[in-house]
Amino acid sequence: MGRVRSRVPATVRALASHLAESRDPRVFATVLLRSEAESEIESMTERLFAEVERDLQRARESGDLEPVPGAADEEARFEYDTRLVLPAMLTLGRIHVLAGDVPLARVGREVDRDFVARGRETTRNVVRALLDGDMRDAVNDDEYEDFETNLRPRERVAELAQRSLQAGVESWLDDPDTPEAVRASYDHAVDRSERHQEADRGFRELLDRLRNAADPDEREAAADAVRERYKFADPEEAGLFEADVDLPYFATQYARVGILYEDMLNMYEADLGVDLGEGFKRAIVLLVVGAQIGLDDTDDYPEDRGTQLTPVTAELNLADDRGTGVERLRRIVETYFSRADEWADDGDHLTRIAVEYVRQQSLDRIDGLRA
Image 1 (cartoon, helix red, strand yellow):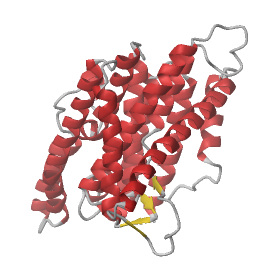
Image 2: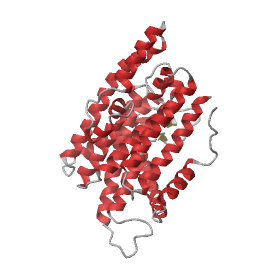
Image 3: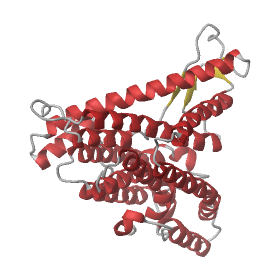
Image 4: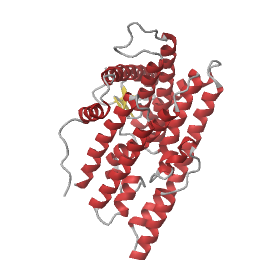
């Protein structure tokens, strides 16, 4: 029998769960800090998109783009729907904590304002790099539904918007004041992302074999191939995560998204000359992988199920029935979030509340697959 899905918002459930566990009054300061960091990220993103809109407006004026019907008198508008800035928000929050800049605790304490200002600037550049990479993948995959604009053709808008962001990223990386280690981490992330894109064709073929097996023996052989090459593959590199390679889908999802965020955190450390902490970095990467499976891949299942091998399409095709597949997915994502919570510092309420929040959201989405 399926679970009854809660009507209480995930944010409320996450906070209540963490409060019940921690009983630490500093949690309330963390909630205020999250609100501040979230507002800062939103402001940064708005400014980045304003720069993109200026570039798109110039392209419109040169005749490279044209307005959609009914928007002839409007300035260029552009938005891009993405969830990927949560890790940057949590890192910015950690920078505030390291600087002593925490709500309800600022009075009478010395706050490193310069460090906070530098952290904000690094965050702005990191967010631009994350958006650039995400848009580049979307353009490469001909996926334009997350690009919102009043200009056309949308494909050309997406291409120009991505180029605009990339130019800003390159300007930061080429700046003499930017440490070489920042460029090295960025290049490593791009290289791994491109290699995963190249491997994706083989993963699609694995799914096709599994879905179209002609008899039980052929299906079992195809299922074994999915388990060996995708679900329990050996990681090409694991870095900080040697203790986590036992997790289902770790190797493929680490190469797909985890390494990008590990490199993002390495860019922060190199640019600011700060140690963010091994536990924090592990928690963030495991949170990202869990969210990729429990949110993104679950949301995309209707489009992916016949063509794209993801942990969601894999489990629902490996299982004998839908209910079994959904239960396995629940256990997998809960394991990722539990591991992320274990790696986070006990006093890192910002990260631990985020882990619980994404856990609650993910389980709600996965339960929706039962229908």
